[in-house]
Length: 256
Image (cartoon, rainbow, N blue to C red):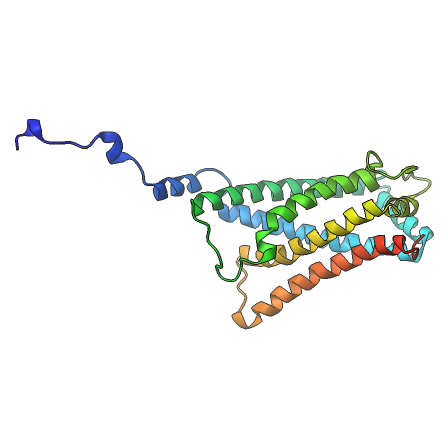
């Protein structure tokens, strides 16, 4: 065959990348890396896990009566005075939590998107026992909790929109946290929203804490793997039970 009659493949067909190669290229592109994103999610997730535990312990002071609970709410606003102004510590703490929330959600979106790209058109199931209900519903529970945070802030912090009628803001002279909490949870629908959100928090914490251990490279021996997972679940369960007890106590008249 002469050179003039030799068949040559079209250049675009010869250089076109395979679907697997294209997915690999897209996974390598962008910042942060998947490893860094998982580290950020793990660290911010642990911060949130510690916060919800401390927050629950503080909320349980409602059982000590209005005087002690209102004093606790006022103490949070005057903490580190006069080094910081009124509510100074509280606003620093809120800012840190907001930054953690933005980073956590952003990295969750990045990791989820890259997982879909890596998986391609086929969905994997049953890998290493991680295909549990809590693992599959992490995006759903995360979105529900994000919406609940907005609801909770409007209800018991800002006192607008979904807040109970007669909501009173705490001032340097007086706190009305106890009355606001009782007024909010006296509404069955608000109590139901809170209880449902705490169930979502339990699921998110139980799997999230275990994932955080894995993502930061902590190796768990097979013989204690079940125990560690049980402890993660127990942590989330304790937070859920403690928080749920409060609206139930208000609805049943234990707290009034």
